Length: 274
Image (cartoon, rainbow, N blue to C red; front, side, top):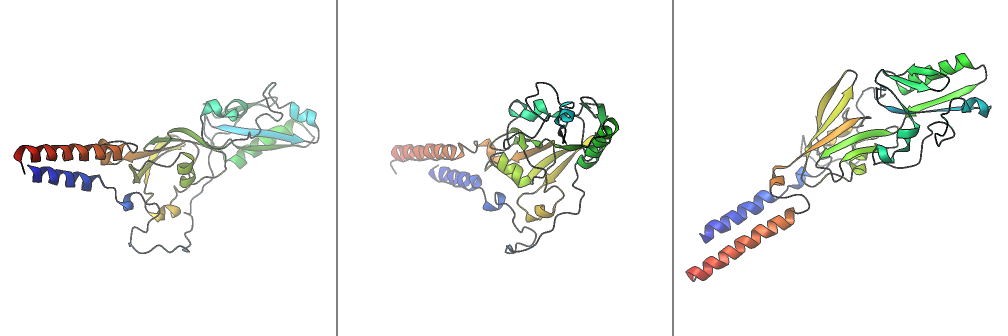
């Protein structure tokens, strides 16, 4: 019986160990060769330009030598002098802590934004540059004076689920962000996350696709999914060892098992007299 319990303890310890290969980023997995630190890895040849979608929030601001003209396009009591200028702040947080949710322009279900004086302008399905030009053309039909338009996405919003240390809706106030920016902004993944199985649920015009990427493999740097896009959902599966305990209490769980086995062995020794 003692040998059986010792064997069970050994099996528990071995199966509870997590190999470094499962938690180390950017390995050279295909060839198992040493990583060349100075190796140049080009980005994937994909068109990164984001296409605006319904329910996106955009910042539209106006500039002119005549301040009275720009006031005509501002919502009253909006808390901003130029109707939705980019507020200060870093990543993280949901709508409740995001000033642009209240001050920016939300694209409705039909793909329109409603601008004072100009009315509804359909910009869904366009890039930022094309949407800016469309709003600029609308401005030019109203005023002969020069009024300049700036339009951009109000940060990159994405959602983390699963084995992240911080889950929920996150925001990165940048025009472009990598998958590692998103990980850092979400407090990293837990030690029990399957880094070779990170799923990206991405919105496309008319539907959704699920993509799987491997964070252990450095080829992710050349992947078309190296850069996240607005409205991405990141889901990381847990390892099977998750059934024993969470990432926070796994060590305590193993210590408890070891203590129980040690106590059992002690009792057996006392009873048998060995």
